[in-house]
Structures are given as C-alpha cells and as structure tokens.
View 1 (tube, rainbow, N blue to C red):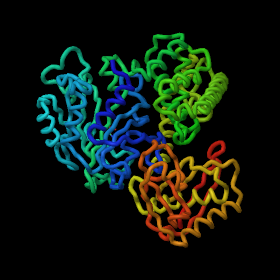
View 2: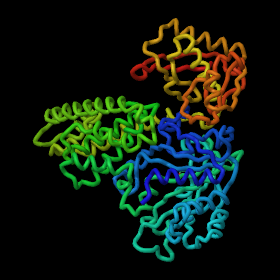
View 3: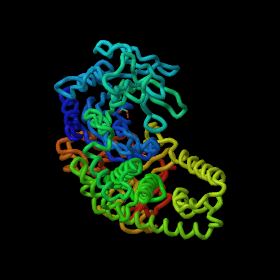
View 4: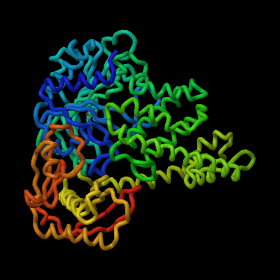
Length: 586
Ligand code: SER
C-alpha cells in the first residue's frame, strides 16, 4: 500500500537525487495570466521560465502542484477523472532533454528502490508526427534502449501526444506518456494504449517543450529546449494499490464515506462521486490564499456551479441536512497538513460555503413556487423552463424531479445553446491576449502595476496588500485590501505619484536573494516561499531608497520612462474589504 504522502515524498526525493531543487507549488488562481481561470498543471506558473526567464532556483526543478481542470467535468463520476488533483512534476529549463527525462521516468517507475513497478505492466506512447513537428523516433529509441518492446510503443497524433499551451499561446511540444496496465492478468502481447485505451491508464507525461504557439497559431522553436513532466498523484496511487477507482485514495475516501453516511440512497455511486469531487474542488479553490467566493463571474462562477451541482446531487441521494460545511471540514482534514492555507482560511471557507448553501436553497424554493405558477396539466413549456433557468437559476433537472413534464424541450435546449454561445463569445474576448505572450504592452502594464501597488501604500497606508492581478494588452486590473471606497482626491494622488515616477525615468531591475534578505530589504509581495529559498525581487528606483521593491517573477520593462501616461479608469468593490482598480497607459 502506498499513500499520497509517500508518493509525494518519493517523487521529490528521487528528483533531488538527480540534482533538482524543490520549489513551492503556486496558487490555484493564476497570477497575471488572463488566458485561463485556473492553474491547470505544474508547468503553468513556470511559463515565463520556459520562455527563457531565469529561475532563481536554477534549471532543474521539481514540486507538487494543486491543479483544477474543468474541461473533463462531464467525465467526473468515472474511475479516474477529477476536477481537482495534485500533480507531481519535474522540469528542465534548457538543461537536460529527452535522454535523461525518459531514463529517469523509467528508473523511478521500475527500480525496486523507488516504485518497483513490473516493467511488463507499463506501455508508452510517443508523438506520431505531423506538419508542425516530426515523428518522435528519438523518444521511441530511448524507450527501446531501456527495454520497452516495440509493440508496447504507440505512435499517436497531436490530440493524444502533444501538450500545451496552458492558455491560448505559450510553450508546448510533443510528449511521451506512460501507462499502467489495469486489465485482467498480464497485458496481451500486442496490447498498447493506441489499440486498447480502456485497459491502460495514463500515469505520467513527459513533455518536450521546444515550441511556442503564437496568437496566429504558429509553432515557433523556443530559445531553449525544456522538459515538463506531470504525474497525476491520485491516479497513480490508485493504480499502484490496485484500487478500483480514485475514490479509494486516502485524500478522497474520507470525503466519499462521509457523504455515504449522510445519504439515504447510499448506492447511487455516480452521484456520490460527483458530490465528492465537486466539493473537494470548490473547497480547494475557496481555501487558496487568493481564495474565491461563489459569484457569477470567472472563477467564482465555477465555484458556484460546483457547489450548486453538489447540492442538487445531494438532494438526489436524499441528504436531508445542510451538508456543505460538514463535507468542507472533511476536505480540509484530508489536505490541511499538505496545504497549510486550508487551515489558515478554514473559517472563511466554512462561512462562505454555508452562505451559498443557504442562498441556493432559497433559489430552489422560489423556483419550485414559480414552477407551480407556470404549470398547466402537469406540464410547463420550454420557454418557461428557460425563463426559470435564466432568471431564477432553477435547473431543468429540478423541474423534472418535481415530476413535471417539459412540453417543448427542443425550445429549451435551443435557447440554452444561444445563451451559452453568447457567454462563450464574451469569455473568448475576455481571455484573448495575456502575459504568456510577453508582449511589450503587457510588460509595461506589469511594471505599472508595481508602481500602482507602491503608490497605493503611500497614499492609503501599509494595510494595502495585493489580492490579485490580471493584465491584458489593453489594461491592468489590480485587487487590494482596503476597507473603503477611494475618494476622487486619493485616486488623483495615486495617479500623480505613479506618473511622477514614470517622468523620473527610474531603472527597473531584479536581484536574486533569499526570503530573509528580501524581507530585510523591505520587499513586499506574497512570501509563500520556504525559509532559505532564493527568490527574484524587482526594484524600481534607487537601490537604497527605492520607490518599489517587490517579489516577482517578471518580466518588466527596463526603465519607467517606457510607460507613457498612467490613468485609473475605474475604482470599485471587488469583494468584502477588497477594492479593484482598472488602469491604462496612454
Ligand atoms: N503539462 C503536462 C501535463 O499536464 C506535463 O506536466 O500533463
């Protein structure tokens, strides 16, 4: 039996023995990247370094990372798909490439000193090649040399064996994936992941990131050749232990079991799995230090959807009590020792989750009343069903659960489709562009963000702390702690202060130092790194009395004179005690 804790430790120890530095995982809410809502892989926070920025911890890195993937949400309930999962990863930033990456993956998986998996139960896939990149015979050769027989190497197209970019643009490349046999007995001679998908479960992916996908959809060679690997923690623990599904894994099972205890219909496995998965994800997102509360916007919308689906599924399995805070506590218990932010933010999470449960139960009640109003001969029209959904948030399934027939369902679906198309268009626009492309516009706004942060602290006080940042080519958006609406005078003072620094033409530069040194030098920013870790600190202005000094991965412009004129276009509330500024450079 191997636990998640043991696998995390083994993985990190192995890569330390190969000269890697362990780095901290990042927040689930990506910093400065408007192209995606959540951190979807360990490589995601490393994008600037894969593109060539220098990483303070060196060129060989490893860690575990919290990830959210909502793309697979419809698969949730099967044996392997989860919307929240942990990913183990190792990286080469322009250091080693295919030979070492593949050999080390093999050693970790099969050596009795590490996982000791029977090599006969492993098969691999490599990229088959297309117009963008050649067939990956190089990786196949390495696998053959390590003893993997030809028939266990599947050559697959881009949709299988290509990874990235994480958003719409950025680093990506061909990958080679490792699969574990979960079928009966031993795998048949000619079975591989290309011809027998259901019996081979992917556990690890080595990506060879040597291309940058541009906004025009072109694949340009990167300055440096990188390796990015990812191993799904829960999935790997499940297959190594011969578990029937990920719901038996130690970080998930207690959640599942607690829901079973509360449910009247204990055999509705699919529904209980969905509740387990969704509440785990929602709590991880809310419990992040940049935690998001349920809302109708961006990440908050996803949280709301996860929670509301869980509540509805809870009704389906006959849970009578308000159960969200009960399950949230179990989630926090399972991972609180690995992610201390869950402990720190526990009270807030429990309070917000209870509020949402309360709110949605009011929505359900009101919706049920409305259904009764629209009801004619035990039926309601598709138009009315859509109205209930779009105006009151009352879902179709709930109408049907009341035993009500929807007369012209096609109308309902057509309207829903139209509705979703509209929001997709909106989302596409919102997520276009981004720091991933390192454009000059974004770099300038990024430097302006540092000036703004420092100026706010001077004008409003030192209680101002960054709560979030999001930059597109057109504008910056900055969230910070401050209890009151800013007065027009304060806004003016902040603008003036920033513009003064721009006029002065201050140098912008970074130094690498330990966390302690950074603190001693008065740097601001999130100190999530461990004691002794080397971090990058950006300074704007004089070395001894700088205008701004902040922990940051970069990149930035070289001098504030490159910025143009700074203007705040909006100041508004973001959430309780947090204000949001939108600003532009013109
Ligand atoms: N980025 C790759 C993945 O998510 C490898 O880490 O699979």
